[in-house]
Image (cartoon, rainbow, N blue to C red):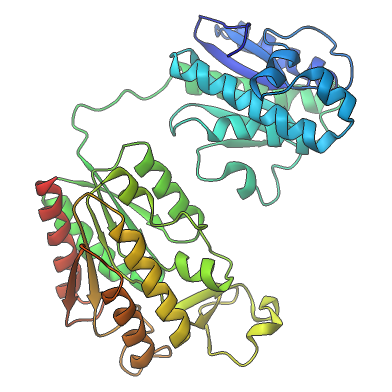
Length: 409
């Protein structure tokens, strides 16, 4: 892929050496002092680098399918950053597949953070990842995504070595060294992993189901269905780490469909089917779309039914038509699997507030949801449970069904 390959295992240090050369050198030297090998990857484009990295910017852009000369001639910083991110990701991922990456550390502002975290997100959970960023004290979801990236707040701009930046950069290097040199060993007692999705309004169901699964010898990872949680679960499934999925709470699909704040994106509920991982899917909290405080709700939803969950979260009841669309999406996505799967329908309500007399009780909307699933689930087993989603009867039925499907697998 590139001419500049490095056959020793090392920490990969990503930086634009035209603007962050001295700072990158400080991190490099500190890592070397701590006994780690380092490969410096130059992700710069326009200015002259202060020193030559182990992997040049020329190689980075070649790995992205272009050349440094083409990027310089284009004079478009946004395009250059995008290509540098793609090239750095390709190089780091190739090195990782060859067993040569101990960890990845990067530094920068918006450009450096975009480039560095792109490479980090391509790596599995567990590989040490440290991003020293001027943006680390704000909303970092777009950079962290669903991976275990440590965001180090630079406090001051990364523009020269001073008493503050020296301490921050040294600490970041030490954190990386600590993660590499003191990585926890895999336990011989590790049990098969089950992924489960939970929301506050489906907590009783998942906690009861977890008891059943743990008693059967499984370790349960619970993901809070807040967008990032669903993405993290899908990522672990794609990495082959999950033996079974108890997808009780598919509420993120509602946010993605309607425009709520907790969407996990269009790929939610696709990984288990793609990997043929046994899955039990239900409709937890599909009665709601999530927004922040009332004043943040888009004007187009004026007149809808709302419920104040707490001071900062407002829930909006999904309509009959929205429930129909959600049912079609759930049925279709699960039907794409060639692995063991079942969809369980709690006939008496899908959340703590969708119950008889509850704020979101709507039998017509529930019927539209269930009917749409019935018409789109294909070959997948459909189980109707005459209980509320938080009743023990439903939780035990879901957990027991998943155990059966995993035995089949």
